[in-house]
Length: 280
Length: 297
Image (spheres, rainbow over the protein chains, first blue to last red):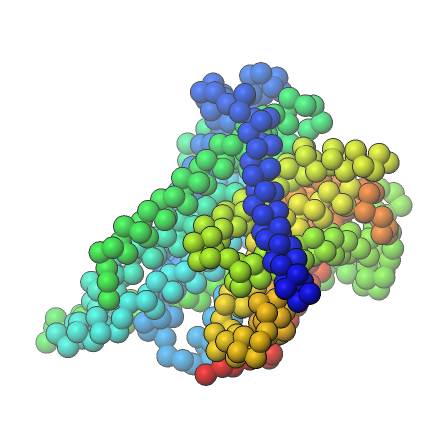
């Protein structure tokens, strides 16, 4: 009897795990069946249109690329700098404790609240309007906690003997960080940053808040240009009742998922490649 | 001598610059709180706070205007509860399987796949809801509205499932082997070890993961905007169209609301409620984890 109960329990747990995996497969399959037929070079190289046959994601794709570049430029130095400070410089004072609690709380703030902040601070306050720069600043704040936490972990994994050897040779703190700690932690930092950027790549809510949901039929040429992005284009098409637009949304989803997969693969390859070389 | 001095200056400038980077996160929090408080106060100059918190009609866009936030909270909680009902049993069962039953090889393949599930953008889940789940629901419940809370709850449940599964599995795996082996030595079956030893010992981590996942469901935006509808109402019927706080905020920002108008200010008042709710849940989650953690040495 006890044995039977145990077996039933095991199969139930197995079924739950399989169900989760099946749901993922179902989701991908659904998007593939509806969207694959609409994927073409023309789709990648056309602007959105009210005629589904002519519509494409050119402005959304370029908008997303611009947005990611700007977000990376803003958030990576800030995030890695903060992580270096917290791991290498800060004493365990009340200030650093507050900073760390604050970072873990920020990681749990809904993305739309960052959108509200971006709307009030960057779009209205700094008068950046509905520009790429306003979007990138908002996204940078959104992923900053993830970048800081993952960079901290990478820096913490560098053994202290490396630092002590550097100090023993007369290096200053910054020299030690610059020439020894950061290079050794680089693969981990890169992996974390790429994953954080892939999170920003899929976010739509903060961009809608700052007003990026408009009809854009050109590619941006400066950070102050208005823009659209892939998740927003997907939202736009998915919220239309006409069936063809649903298929366009599915096709755009396939492009977005392919880009995210590429970013994740890059992160994993970097991690595996350097894990082979660096052994403490 | 001179070189040493410039070096010292450089060192201290760099340290200050890095400190500034770390303070950026504090500034973000201060920014969020100030922006929300500032506009919320100016909202309460026009709408009494009591009407906002206890009113049961939310209609800021039409005349006569009503500003009772309860329908939006009701919608948000429906999604959170519905998602939890789906994600908690599935999440915990898959965590038990991965931690207690599966071979290391299976675990090493399944865990990354679950992480992929967690990394899928929420707008994709929204699309999945309207293109797949909603039609499926309407096969079984023909009366269901095109936009309904059930469809959104299901996809949000799928979305938070990997979080529960992954965090609970971490908690279970950190239960020391000795406890399990002690129970086996006394003649327990694997089922008894899982449910009577491992689950209770890992309870704080598991509960913390529930609270964190529900807080994620409360803040979820794109899937509920696409699938749950835009009809704020006090209902418990999952097959009706509802509206969550997040979906309302999106709805307003999609339209052309003039700066300083009462509709514009509602974004911040509703955002304040949302921020307070999720912050509270995150703090509770951390507190559970700290307070009830079993320490093994």
